[in-house]
Length: 147
Image (cartoon, rainbow, N blue to C red):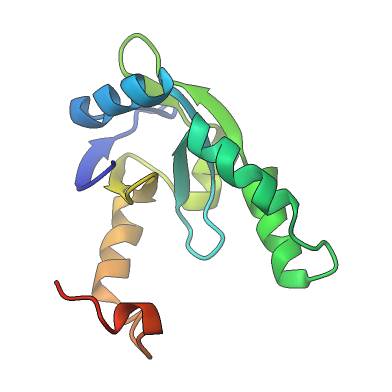
């Protein structure tokens, strides 16, 4: 389970060090094999342990190519997907196309989302926190949730 948020830095070559607690979980769960891809709704990246990606990939592929929304999701999720390996120093190299898509520069936020992680530029993350995005009608599934 990937929880919490981590402020991290990326070097000029596009490498970032995975925080130790997250790295240990990734090494245990998937031997450090990741799939990183574009988020379909936000300008951030989705970071999946490879087994999680293998579970959702057939569902993405099964979407109708005749539906414009579904086709856009397929193009982003599959088209930007990149297999990465955590190296011996606990780092991953984010390809330039993904860095550009998410506007990643030096300061980043790695945010746990349960079975996956999101990778944000720190600036976009702070802008998202300050925005009123997501405010609106509460989904039925949340009506009985007590925090």
